[in-house]
Amino acid sequence: MNQSPNNLERLRAAYAAFARGDVLAVLGLMDENIVWEEAEGFPYGGLYHGPEAVLNNVFMKLGTEWEDYQAKPEEFIDGGDTCVVLGTYSGTWLATGKPMEAPFAHVWKMRDGKAHAFRQYTDTALVQRALEA
Image (cartoon, rainbow, N blue to C red; front, side, top):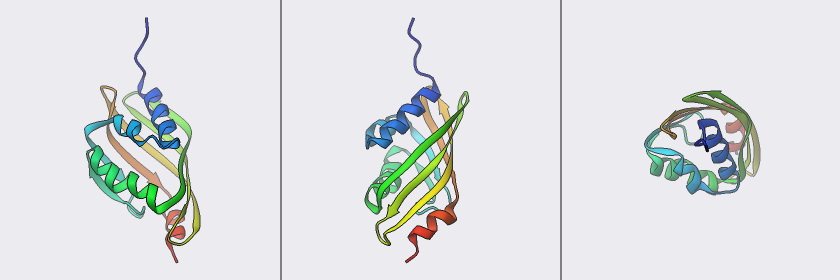
């Protein structure tokens, strides 16, 4: 009997999709009413509601304002409906040409196989250094 993928497997697949540029696969993980919270001090800090808002206000900007932007997961922590992913961001801010590397923690709230909430934690001071001219 085949089991459906669990939340952690879905998240692993989403990070792998993001790494290969398959944004549609990542959006497919999201509940239509997802609440996405970017850390204040991050270039796109704030709350976004729904996959389209995440696409337009986060993913599209990551793809056009950074060179070789990556969110590389290093550890997946299974809390059932709440999962945590620890990793490292890296990339070069195109406006300044400065590279960035910063640790992150992502907290995902899952329901019925979909992400209904996401919260980003990162060292925004490290990110801001890349943005400064």
